[in-house]
Image (tube, rainbow, N blue to C red; front, side):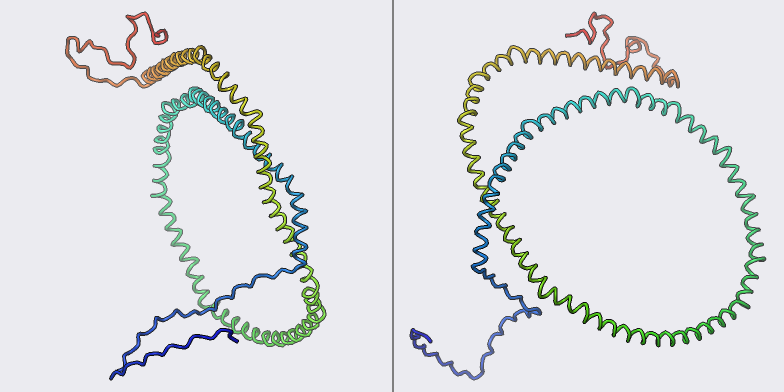
Length: 377
């Protein structure tokens, strides 16, 4: 029943008369839905018993979870500090040391194992292997090909023709004249036996089917129906109650963990502020106004001269290693010339300073100087 009166309806204008009625525009065709939309599930109504059970459980769980969350946050912060300040720098230092040791061991391994074996393979084993390969081709492959082409192939063709005449043709005649009629007779006899056995099997099948229906009915009413009733009216309700209680306890733990996180952040923030005022600020003042000037003095008077000396030693060591490499390269070239000789090249028949000019080398001559690359500054 409406308590308020509705407004009077406005008079509708009468359509004008036209000799031919205009066709109304067709409405846009709506897509046809082949499936019905599923109704939205209604919100679950919770009773007073659920609310009364949920609140004490959440309070108890919160009291138990807050200390655990505080300890957990402390362990996380300590672990991050140890990883960032100790483990990561230690790992980087070990990685650098490992790369240096690996480079030294790689150079030593190449000098002791790779280069000698490579020279042995290139200048001894490879020429010997090529010679043995050519000798095997001449002594084994060529005679074997000749024997296969002029001896084994004619003998094989003759044996093939003899086997066709003595074996294939008699076997073909025996199959066409004897085995085929015998097979047709055996097949006809087998079809007759099959029809007899099929009739016997169908009879036995109907007997077994009737017995199975009777036994299945008895088993259904003696085992299946009681089991279904037990599941439907006893086990399923108990399972729902247990699932509901477990879900409420899980939700309580989730809420308690989040609330404990806020409490833990507040507690640790307060402790961090106190620790900063009591320890960090004094240490920072001592570091800035005491240790930093002392460190600058030590750096300028001790570390920088030591660094320059270490770089000078490194430069001398690199020059020594370069000299050793050049000596090894010249020794390899001398060994190669000793084994295989040198190629004869036409020398230019010209006189003057160009003919007596020495070839350019990487290192400069030091015969006229009293200093070597190892004794230079």
